[in-house]
Structure formats: structure tokens, C-alpha cells
Length: 254
Image (cartoon, rainbow, N blue to C red; front, side):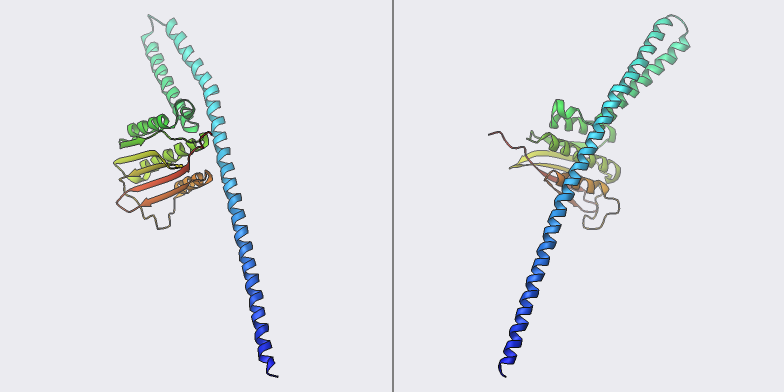
């Protein structure tokens, strides 16, 4: 009966091999499911971002057409009243001048809101000039010293919008939270990719610690990853923050 221990050992080894094979199969199925869900979530994120931009475009168009028509009509009415009151009723003329100035301010506000909703300058001026306008207006409004090194890059229209939104969100966060004095923005080709960097000399934060109100950074990361790019955040308390994104460059025509 000396063969009994050998038989038991063989049976045990067979059982172990079977369990190992099943564990490998379960792990493979788990990895496949995780990969499938990642693809689905990326596609869903891309769809939601496109839907959001489409809605912004629709709102911007309505503001441009409908609100623009109302403001134009109001300014024409003011001009007619001023011509009828010319040479008389100085108080009424002063009020009309004040109303006309207010309408001009509303027109300027409408333009800023429309550009924030849907940056039409991207289509007409390109990414570099549009970023220059954004950064110049940000410097004027915030008082920060802005250093921009923006080189021409090849990006699809969708990815050019991704870069614009990244910089827009980054400078808004800096204005709200960073307590910075200077801001550096760089855009440059990087092999088959395009690199964009936003850096400040503000208070920074612990990038390794969980953030309780980091929805801006989370939104940036989702937007970049949905465009097949990567985002890296570097920050240290008291030493500022740097964002670096890499996006695929537009394929060159054959």
C-alpha cells in the first residue's frame, strides 16, 4: 500500500493546479471587466464633455442672437430719444447718457460671458492668440505678473479646446486659492505630443494628501484623460503648484 501516499500527493497537486487555474481565470476576467469598464467610463466622460460644450455653444449663440438684438434695440431707442431732446432737458440728456454707458457695459459683459461659454476666438484666431487674450485679461483683472511662452502647436480642434479649458480652469483656481504673485504658462511641441504647463508661486498644497475640494483638479484630469492625454500635478506647501499636461498632437497629412 506504499502507493497510497503518492496517489494522495498527486491528487493534492492536481487540486492545487486546478485551483491555480481557476484563480488565474478569475483574475483575468476581473482584469478584462476592469478594462471594459475603464473604456466605458472614458467614453462616457468624453460624451458628457462634448454634451457640455454643445450646451455652452447653444447658450452662447442664444445670448449673442437674442440678448444682442435686445441690447441693439435699446441703444437705438436711446439714440432716438437723445436726438429728439437735443438742445433741451439737460437732466434727461444726462440720464440718457448714463443709460447709454450702462448699456455699453452690458454689451461688454455679454461678450465676456459668451467667450467664457464658447471661445469663438479659437476658430478665428487660433490657440496661441486666444490664450494670449485670456492671460492678458486675467493679468489685468487679478494684478498677477503673467509670463507666457506659447509656441505654435498642431492640435485637433477638440484638443485645442481641451488646452484652453485647462488653462482657463487653472488660472481661475490660482486667482481663488493660490495667493500667488506670478504665473507662468508654457505651450510647446513635445515629440508626437503637445505639452502645456501652468505654474505659480503661491501657497501650494500637499499633493499627496487627500483633497476635500479638488473638483477642479478632478475635472481637469477627466478632461485630459478623455482626450487620450495625461495630467501631472506637482505642489508643495509654500512652494507653489505646477500642472503639466501632455496631449497627442494632430496627425500630419501624408
